[in-house]
Image (cartoon, rainbow, N blue to C red; front, side, top):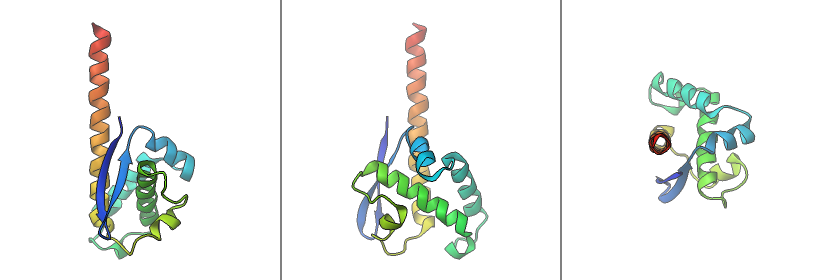
Length: 125
């Protein structure tokens, strides 16, 4: 089951959606593994001094791609490229948005694990 959360960017509540389909969509769109990118991004953020300038360009691009994919999945009217989507905003802090996206992803994973446990209990009966 997908989970939707709204994150305030530029005084707009922007919907982001997480589900088991996101890794597939991400892989199809960017030819990359979202799990590896999230891990690398978390490591880059943990190792930074809290400013965007301390992150390398690859980390920023991973963040933009992950945020874009979750926004596009939540709202199909989102433009077809991350660049077009980002054009809708002034600059925003990766350090404010990324923790909320990671939390949303974590809730999605918890939900999937709980659903699997319920299914396992049903099949055991």
